[in-house]
Image 1: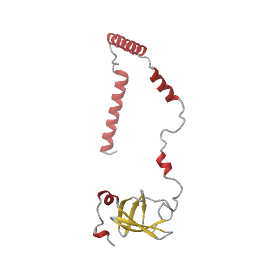
Image 2: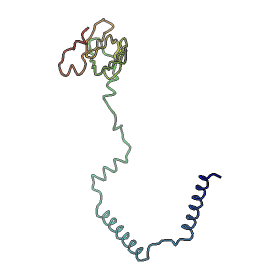
Image 3: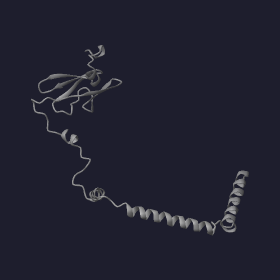
Length: 173
């Protein structure tokens, strides 16, 4: 047996001996009888105070109604979002104007991504709005083509549109 193992064994035996002593031989520490009486009296006083307070404070009619309605089943979902449902409308008719918001630009190596209406697109991808395709991505604008009539729409980046800035030299072309 190595020296390290002997040390560990001696420590384990010492802990075992102390545990036996503390569990069986040491006198248990109990609070004095006088202390118990004070604690019981204080607990009874606290219970009496709480009970009296509850008896004095009855629920008002409004509070009772609120509790009653909270327990009742809800007729409709309180977290229902109407905006989300409206975004799933039928496709636009030819006369209706489609609105595009170009809010983000990301370039990873040779790949450019544009965030249009909250979705990521690469050049050549069809947009979520039927009949439109992304033709060009620049940091300050994107070019979207309406496929059916081959009409190109230039959409400025949201920051440029909000500040009224014109396109930078890097955006030309």
